[in-house]
Length: 227
Image (cartoon, rainbow, N blue to C red; front, top):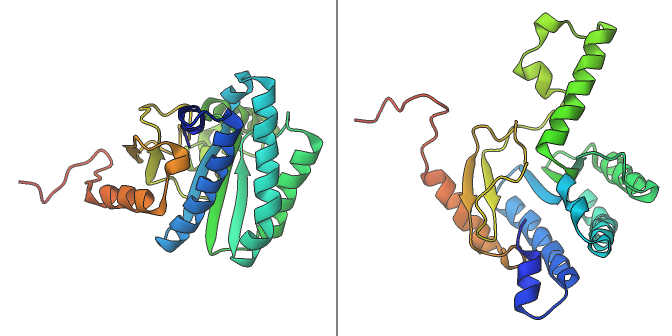
């Protein structure tokens, strides 16, 4: 979800206003995903690199996560949404950690739709944390080195139990992956949109899905039907 700051700047507003509009776009995206019949949606809301931003902006972003979960959790629970937060939680404030645990515990039995929020997340950081966990498991004898394969290693990632993404959408015209789901998105299709995130609508989402279905996915193989 990229472009909140530029959206605000173009309107003479503070960056915080752009982030607030970004939250509204996130809400629209969740509803649109469900209406489109999708089962999984991951929103990249705060990266491990975002700590480099001004302290005030970081504080505001933390507050927006509190607001999003606090305001939307009752409705998400009622609608059967399973909320998962992926990323490193160690340096989050105690109240935010508690809110994350609350969101996950109160929706863990929901199965209609899975909403993953990547918060304080980075693909490389995820690899490091997973590698530590694998090393610990091997040292304890829980996992034999010879048994390590993609499936076993994947079980140590934040996204364990959730299928790899078929499609990654990035807004705002930037064409880079920015440390997002590096392992999981190995064979995902990428769509880069010029739309700034606060302007992301159900119609834009639907258009991206239509583009996805026009593509041919071969996973390193060949299309036998091709001439």
